[in-house]
Image 1 (cartoon, rainbow, N blue to C red):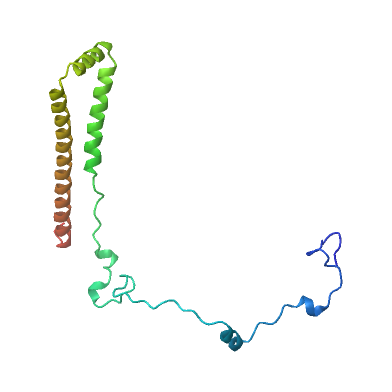
Image 2 (image 1 turned 90 degrees about the vertical axis):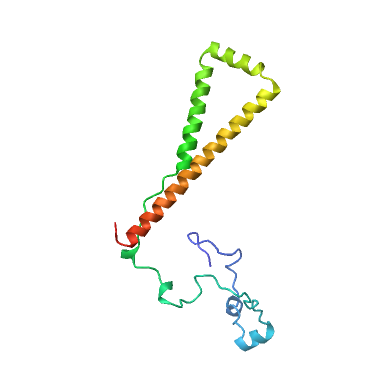
Length: 161
């Protein structure tokens, strides 16, 4: 029954109902439930390889090294970011230099208008060549950095450092 402090949980709950209607039905016996619904299993795994975490370790070399023997390398310098940042900063500085003086703006505009199509194509090819050169310099720096890191790792593994 409800009171003003405790409202009804269900409308009409203060009507008297037999106790048998309030008790939930008993679950079916397990054998009867198994016979009533067929069991659906997922398909068996047919792949030939397991993920590396699931493969059992076969030799002692598969175990991770002890924390004391792991050689930590220094963080790498991102040469591409440095070089491209410098190039783009130089381009921005040149643009600011040209745009701050009306006389330089006029000279640049007259030079661009006076370009022949062949000269404009040559300048575009030159600019693309400069970008390719910068990309090559970045690749050389990255390769040199990897070589230095490999030599440093080999030397520290041999106990020379």
